[in-house]
Image (cartoon, rainbow, N blue to C red):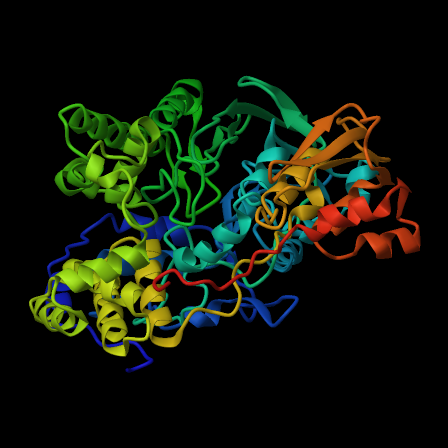
Amino acid sequence: MSNGPKPATEHTRATNAAVHADLDDADFERANRGLIARHPTGQIEGPVGFAWDTGRYDFIEQGTAAPDTVNPSLWRQAQLNAIHGLFEVAPGLWQARGYDLSNITFVEGTDGWIVIDPLTSAACARASLDLANQHLGERPVTAVLYTHPHADHFGGVLGVTSEDEVRAGNCRIIAPEGFLREAVSENLLAGPAMARRVNYQLGLFLPTGPQGQVDAGLGKGGPLDLPGLLAPSEDVTHTGQELDVDGVRILFQLTPGTEAPVEMNFSFPDRNWLCMAENCTHTMHNLVPIRGAQVRDALAWSKYIGEAIELFGASSDLCFASHHWPRWGRADVHDFLRTQRDLYRFMHDQTLKLANEGLTPDEIAETIELPPEFLAHGHTRPYYGDLRHNVRAVYQRYLSWYDGNPAHLDPHPPVEAGRRYVDFMGGAEAVVARARESFDEGDYRWVAEVVNHVVFADPSNTEARDLQADALEQIGYQHESAIFRNAYLTGANELRNGPPGFGGGTSALAGALDVEQVFDAMAIRLDAETAAGIERSVNVRVDDAVNEPADWVLGLSNRTLWSIPGRHDASAAATLATSRSTLIALYQREVTVEGAVADGSVTVDGDVGAVIGIYELLVVPTGGWGIVEP
């Protein structure tokens, strides 16, 4: 079994050669417009090695034809996303692009910088701020705006300001209402699973190169750093709200349920600028990420873009976002927004039209094609999202994952199904032999489906693993979506080399948990088998609870862990008093109950063993579990 990538097959070469990506060359002019300076080395030191290294993508040369292992349309997007530097977008407005998955935007205020979306990594944000200060004149950061609660839009905040600066009132942090809860919850309850799956979405463990990771659709990829978080000091609560931010007037539009559960666009009415957050970028977006998240509302998304056109379109000479490059000129901005609006409406309406005609999600995905009106534009092509995947997301939002066929209502899990399929098809050797014929015919989707059964029936079957890897790899080479390419190639890599020894991880955002979220996070770690027959409750008093009750009951019954806010239970076995940070540290396994009692950060009145017993029932999720194998 070969452990490295394979070349493109004849079928893949022919498929990619037939792709015509004759799109607007003005995108390259837009992406290069206003370049002031580049990071001197492109290498940004992080906590462990380089958080970012533009040199990893030196193989993507501007103006070159796509290698036969990369879809030519995706290659074009990869070239655009490889353009990096500090750019003047308009007088008083600059962006650093290409030093993280997202952009960081600098607006000149009266006294300092207004920073919009400070990247994922503090190291990358600091390097970008240093670049701006060096070439534009040094200014303090007086405000940070978070457009929405995805980590690549807030995780680098500690690179541009500090908690002390915020507490002292020297830096405002402004975000849409509900930001903090959504920032934590999306990455918490399903955090380990999402962290494992994001490796597939971004290709984090793939080598860069024509046979590996070339792009992430929204940008080059993710930085090798963990996000941080500072809580907002001010909320935007309604559309039409206006704030004076360091002498700059900003008018806000809330867009909940679009690209994030809470999000906001905003205009600068005195300067005719419009920021569309991540609601309009230069790609079709996901209606549900393959890393996992709540399904997004395509209808609301389309309507909020329409509302932005009505609110701001007639006066916007510039439109920029927190990914990709801006659009200049009122007519161009209007056309861009209108086409983006119609893209999400098209996917929503046509999916439901066909669903109401009785088609299942797989049938709808196979039926719908992106029409020429959208294929003509780079910004509506599926570089990050994917039409087939988005169709399934719309279907799921309205009709669930279930397609209505009772045969699909309760299928066998993959291992048991695999064993049965392989037996029915005459054994593993026969399946692999037939699948190899399909591979030679270029039917890689079928090979991936059928050989998957052999791998799950017997993961030690190296011939099946290698053939499955080969099929996934060729599908990845052909895909226009960067994240689908990354997923297929990561699957191929893990079939050949095994999964990584980590990948679940503990959220770096845990420090922002409120008390209720801590208890909810503990509950999903409960070992239900070990908890059988155990019933108890303990009282908890959190000395520094903010906007929450200080008193709680934490209880265990029927193999579930539950909490009640605002009171104590007179029959509880013990009362634990501590701070929120220590409560988080106990959940994170950074300290034990015994250790916290010994150092005085926890006091227990009553049976300390009852408290210890609850924490002993919690298990820490492991990372690196199999995805393309059992």
